[in-house]
Length: 462
Image (cartoon, rainbow, N blue to C red; front, side, top):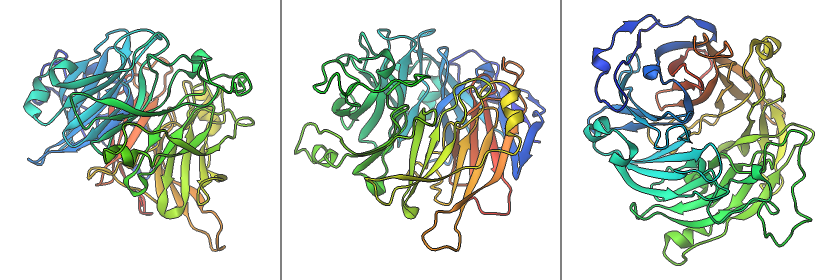
């Protein structure tokens, strides 16, 4: 096992990692065809959120930006140039301690977008930060987000908690799951929708488009007939993950929680980009809705363009599988107006034990296949986070029958030992990304920090 680094400095103080003592890494509770490269506790602030991105710097250094789940720490900055010895360069506190979490981020070149969501509607700060991360020394010495701020795009309001999740990869437009000051939901659970923000003027970002599920906004012309049907376990009809890829820049793929997996035509954004329009309206292409009978919470909708497929995950939010099954679905999207479920990722062989183990078990995030140079763009495999099921890797295996959907096989997993400070007594892996070198970076939701993993199986990772 590689040594892990422990950081002992005050929040916001730079470059203390070189002075921190190394201690033995924890033994893995379970592993198949994966091994631990390094583990970092992030200075005791190991509550990883749903945002990680790697910056390749001109001098060869590689910097991981990691968003946090809680309302204490917002952002960790980790040097992962040597993945066997990650070092914590800085941590920035929440801009609203006890109130706002950062949870999600996106990186395009030297601009980092960071989400802010509050605990309750009406609180501040709520919105999106744009940070200048060009000067690493400045990043290391910053004590607050404001020290790096280019702009703050405010989405606060009486009924808004701000931005839960964002997609920012092209340096021009950010795609947000957010509330807004002028949006009043018909149900408090439906407070976040899909918004597009033009950030080409770094100091003055502006909204250029939005879409919400008809019936979820007070004043919708279709009311009351279009009010969404509330589920037995009501998780809300609101946007979550949004993916917009350069190879299909006219489409957005959105996990919309109880509303399912939604495809949008965003071709109108090209008119905004060209200066021929000030705004546009995303147009609904299709909505894959499989709840009921399944328990919903559609989280991630990720296309595999070369295969005409998509991977769709549902987030587990109940303890001990109370809201099971939360699955990863294989969806045929060749006819984008009629997406069809053609398979699922298999459940682990010890799924009963995982459900009984405590905390959450089930699907959550998928590696987002960012288009940048530091991200793996997987088309034959996918990597997911499964809370107490750790990180799990699946391979799509073509079958001999022409036109038949692929078979799905689990080819690797890594379940770290539970951090001592996790109340459930289990690991709770929240998010995972894969870099272009095929290293997996995963974080624990509660306290465990950062895990860097390597796939060692015989089947290629892609």
